[in-house]
Image (cartoon, rainbow, N blue to C red; front, side, top):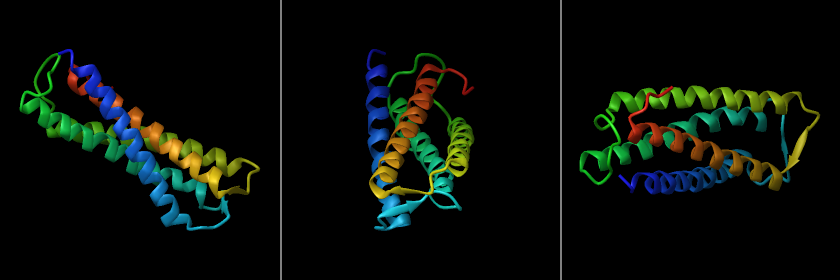
Length: 154
């Protein structure tokens, strides 16, 4: 039981690093090497929606499936109940995506109504990396904490 908290902390850090790195990769795939990135008009701002969905899905399912496997093999304890089911993980993914979409929509809206027309690519990239890492960490921490603790999703 004492290994549960370090396990969640480690998986949360790994999720943050991976989601930040993937965010950087997709930033260059989508926006290329432009010096300045257009914020509005369905560019940078709206990309927060797609990034939110991708990060929430990955940050929930990948660590969740790894933790479920560890629970089934006895390498990770469960504070109460039985190991999470696939159905539980799918519900967790759905709720994570829904929450992340609301956050992404709010951020996109704020960028669209702001007076910022463009961002230098370094700032735009930094914001995307930080957002992906923070969202990935939050989703992973939230899902794993509930998963190993036997707590309800909401």
